[in-house]
Every structure is written in C-alpha cells, then in structure tokens.
Image (cartoon, rainbow, N blue to C red; front, top):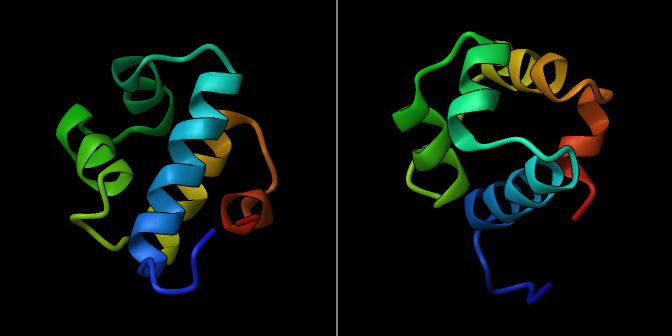
Amino acid sequence: MDKDISIRIKFGLNLKELRNEKGLTVRGLAALSGLSKSTIENIEQGRFSCSLDVQYNISKGLDVHIKELFNF
C-alpha cells in the first residue's frame, strides 16, 4: 500500500479484507466482537482509530491472532 495512506486507512482496509475472507458481514463481525455495527464501519473506513481492547475483540471475532490486523 501507498506509504502516504494513513495507518487508520490501512488498518481499516485490512480489517475489511479479513472480514470478507471470513465471509462475515459488518453486522456479523460486530456481533462476534461485541461491538456496534457503526463502530466496525467507522474503523473500516478509517474514521476511527481503536484501542487495544477493541483490536483484541475484533481479532477474537475474526478468530485471528491480533497481529494479523496489522499485516498491511
């Protein structure tokens, strides 16, 4: 990815890719991670940065190691 793209955008794009690979909808990931649908959408679109706790919950919802959220 372009180094000029913010880390929030990179994180969000990677999250969306992982979610799609798992065959999950935004609503499905939200339910599995204990987060709201709008929170997932905002993270994927690079509008929100998220805490370590949220990253952990997302990784559990996706059933991936947390480091996979940063493979971009």
